[in-house]
Amino acid sequence: MPDPPTSTTTPELTGVSVQPGGAVRGEIRPPGSKSLTNRALICAAMACGQSTLSGALRSEDTAVMIDSLRTCGVSINVSEAGRTIQVDASTRSTSADAAHELYIANSGTSIRFLTAALSAAGGNYDLSGVERMHQRPIADLVAALAEVQLGSIATQSPGGCPPVAIRSRGWSDKPIRVGGSVSSQYLSGLMMAAPVALQARRSHADPGHPVGDIQINVIGELVSRPYIEMTASVMRSFGASVDIQEIDLNAVDSVSLRVNVSGAGYQGIEYAIEPDASAASYFWAAAAITGGAVTVLGLTPDAMQGDVGFCRVLEQMGCRCVHDADSMTISGRASRGVDVDMNQISDTVQTLAVVALFADGPTRVRGVAHNRFKETDRIGDLACELRKLGATIDEHDDGLTIHPPGDGITPATLETYHDHRMAMSLSLAGLAAEGVRVLNPSCTGKTYPEFFADLETLTGRPHRWC
Image (cartoon, rainbow, N blue to C red; front, side, top):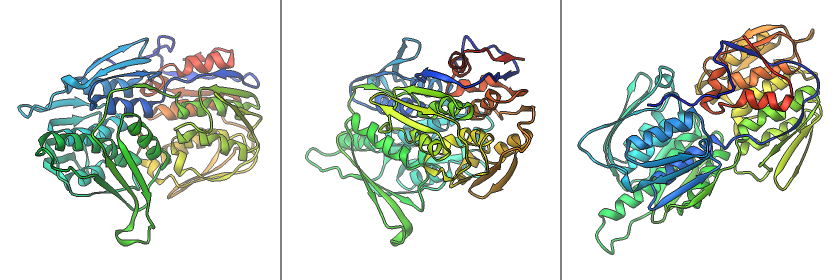
């Protein structure tokens, strides 16, 4: 695999200190959404015809996805510094003669989406990654696939974690059942794979023989529901038919959601990708921490990405949010703590936690037990670093409570645990406090290689690299 892309403006040093200097004011357009880019890549790589993706994200996670799809024979041409991606799936291999070895690094979207899609497409595949990836659960997804797999699929690490070995001849026509409490990416992966399985069935079916829909049932509570709506929207853009039904949790088998997928498979299209709303949260937080005003271009409350809901939480904390046809602006200081369920916007928990350090009164975050299974333990490890800054933290089964430091932020050197979101969120404390140093800043390359350069441009003052 080629080396992951890194920013040409971020020095390869061990730490960075973002410098305080008053209210942050300005506007910025974040790079394309990682979630949308990787979803669109899956659909395009399994489509009939060629696709062009514009506004795409260039990062380690998208490079991992592209490299894996190329290993499977998909023709992909990347141009305009990664922002435009042309995909031709006509060369994709489904040979059963040899296994394709795919290296997934620590990209959760890549391993979950590829596991489902390749299982549906047929062929032999071995998916592995870094040590942390081999500790991240994928058992619920593999168990769901095993029930319909023609062939075999299995995990190879304790606790149902990757590597994953797939020996597939496609899917049977049985309904699929999957748990929803660990990651919405399991359901998203199955949904995006369903048109692939339908297309494979049609290619082998007798002429005139009807091919039924694929039904996916979610067992128990589903976390991060907005990502499912995002997945359905991308699939529909590529020609799939997706119907999502809410089911009473008290019904038989505790099914909370039912998805029916139909149609003739994906078709190649031209597809424009929104700026990343999770990345935008850091810039809105910069305004909330410093009492400034930051406009993020390319996003509105109607965006496909649920993380624009982070702005509503900042409003509850005392900020003002306004928007127009192509932007959202946060202004004013987040002056009061809140009690908030962040299940639907869990990728912004770390961002909110740093904002909460500067509020008056505690902030309670609920509904994010699944955050412990991300790139790092985003509850326990986050609590550890916030305590270094002088905060008192109460950990809960489903989140944490942040009590701001009474005497101001304590200067500290903070660990990132190789987690891009830890690095970006924790660095924001330096906007209003001296002596905050964040280690391993280059880990932001996973989703946002240019983060520190963009933050420096927005604030108008250089960071201290050390």
